[in-house]
Length: 444
Image (tube, rainbow, N blue to C red):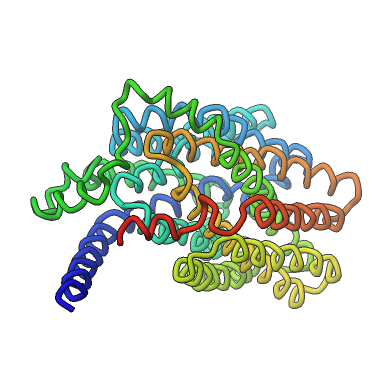
């Protein structure tokens, strides 16, 4: 009985410690991620005025949206390798200041070439942010707690669309023409400059490692070191070994491909949903407000599904069912091309499914990657998955230009989500390295 009481007391103490860590790290990281999402996808709202003002075709816009991800994919792994050497504070300062200034410079775009170049540079400068944060979390949370921390960080990804729609709608509606600037120009300026300030704030408030955290006591630092013993990244000179180990791990590539299939739907909708809704007769402001409904439901669903997945230790079916719900939503959307209400219901199903699937998916790498391969493996998964951003906007734009609508695109995106569910469920067997149980066993 004494042993049980002691174990319970230790677990309770650990719970308090990691809640403390979460409150010190995650709010800053989540706010940064919200603006990361805004600067990545605000072009989807801006194009509602840009195409009219600059005479850009759907094909030009689609290609410009995709060019972002070419720069992002090329520099993702190098950025994460640099983070492992110089620390998160310097990395976030570099990434956020450069991407914020470049995103704000989008307000000066006047030609397709300028559009392509600046979108490429925004991608280059943003590269490494999300996988860098995921690697950063491995320095603070042991594997049995990493899934929850990862899920909490990705809540910002689901929360961001709630902010994005009304903010973009209000800026483009009420600031259009102020000081001679169009609404889309104000959008890029007002969502780009805060990133510079956030980068400075992250540099000032986030410690690189637990040993650098002044708000931790000596005993708390010792506890974290004890829990992470054997999981800490190797010395900088071994980083290439970590890259090689991650590249040889087929599970990393499978997760990357599954992420690719899910992100096809996420980014295609992020960039083209405003156009889809506007085509149903909604104003720009209405589009921004209506877009919050699917996003809010996605946040709630991802919290519930992520918590249930953590509680049961099951990943495959939580991901698979979520992906299939999203696929069904996309298929049903094709039935209501001109009716906003049922279309929003269907898009809500898509958001519920993709948000939940994405959260569960990113709780998996921490269970299969060794500490030495964590930075490289997470970057590879993110790069492979993020490359969907190269394909999705351009492909949807080209298909829309060729067919005059979104129906064929929605069918293809739905099929991709079904394939993602099938691959993950069949490839990763129960109690594989992706299951939580082995990690939990380490604590017993």
